[in-house]
Structure formats: C-alpha cells, structure tokens
Image (cartoon, rainbow, N blue to C red; front, top):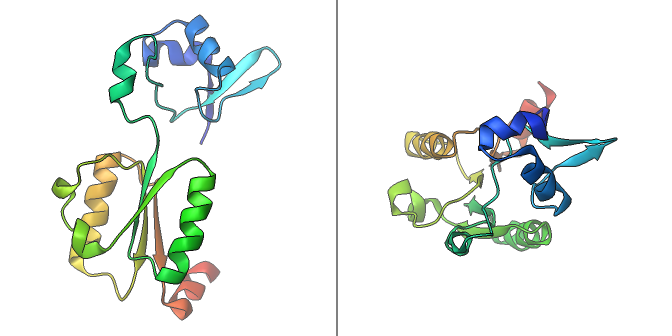
Length: 155
C-alpha cells in the first residue's frame, strides 16, 4: 500500500486540496500522516462523507466486519479486539450468509473461519464478497486445521 498527497487526491475525489487538508487536520481521513508540510494519505482511502449536508446521517460511516464460523472461544476475544479498534463486528454462521443478496448491511471486511475443507459454496461466497468489496486485502481466511496451517506458514 502506497501513499498519495492531498494534491493527488483532489482529482480523484473532486474536492479542493484545501478541503482535503482540512479533513486530514480533523482526523477524518484514516491513516493520513503529516510529513513536514505535506499530508500523505493511503492510496486506497475512500472519500469521507460530507458532514456539511444532512446526507451523512444516512451513510454508514463506521466500518463493519463480518466474522463467519468463529468458534465460541475465539468469538469473545475477537469481538473485544475488533471493537476496541473502533469497528463494528458481527458474528454469523455460513448457513446464514450463503447468499450476499440476503445481507442488508455493507461490510468493509470479512474474517472467515474454514471449519472443514472449504467447499465450492464457501469459495463462491468468498469470491462474491471480494467482488463486492473490489478488494481481496479486506478478507482474512483462517483454517482451524493446524497441521495444514503450519504447512502454509512455512511456505
């Protein structure tokens, strides 16, 4: 992940450089850092909602994370950790979310726990979720099969 300057974002977002700098100063752009006189913004950052109009009230500005198939002993720890970072986390079972069409909320990320070997339905769900996000970096797949996981980590 790289960084771009406020000047580089003005064309992308269609707002002035001055407005982007103001958003950075107000800490409304996640990951923005000031180096000397220049603000650097992560290149994949989405434009924050405009709070000068009332529409921001209807836009979900908090990031939601869907956690699928987490074991009970992992859920509590994971929920506390994620919520401490300011995210909204929801735990679901795969049979509840097989179809993305049934979801009535937007999720910024997915943490998927594979219980057995992943079947075609699970792979399709993850691919569709990835397409909906237009980013694979927001998806984490955890395999409970420890010997297999250790083999993957070694490679």
